[in-house]
Image (tube, rainbow, N blue to C red; front, side, top):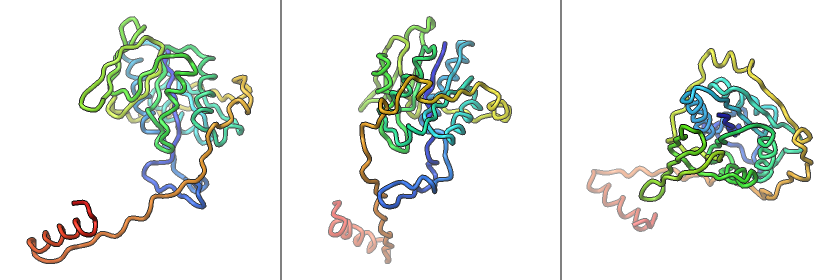
Length: 260
């Protein structure tokens, strides 16, 4: 079966994001990675292909030139080909614009299943997968932690966690599935995979290639200001023997922190 995986490159989750004058200073961000939730989606696509012993896994992203590295990582993991939608007109796109571009691109290729991460860890919108399903007129199941594809590849059973239990949903295919942590354990690219990644099919499309005009994918939302979280106050060490320290701790929690 043909599986399309939507991938996004995001700042490394281990670094501190620089914020100045109400905006993220992207010029100072030097480390980028594949969005962690998208890694679950890539791994699941590879496992489905391995289970059936046939098919193709295609990665697709919308982003600047540097996003190539995210696609190469997915190719090194085992994906078959990558499509990179790179156009200056898409700079500053919001979730709706990105979903519309992805939908236009996916319409140009055969697919039986579309996988996305449940959200990107940079903007945390959690909208792309659902918007994509709406634009393609497909069913979708979000935050999935277990996925089973029927032997005839015409339906799937998805499991997700809900408050107090688990929910099992059956859907016809093609469909859009968004991956949650726990769906699988993503593999590391092998040395052979890394070497072969740059030899696999890699296609770059612009808006013109998709038949879209810049005004058709104009952002529908605007980020007014971004503020870093307030600095945390330094901790306090309570001196004295255990009995005295506990009494002082309880007093501080009641009178100053006001949490008890």
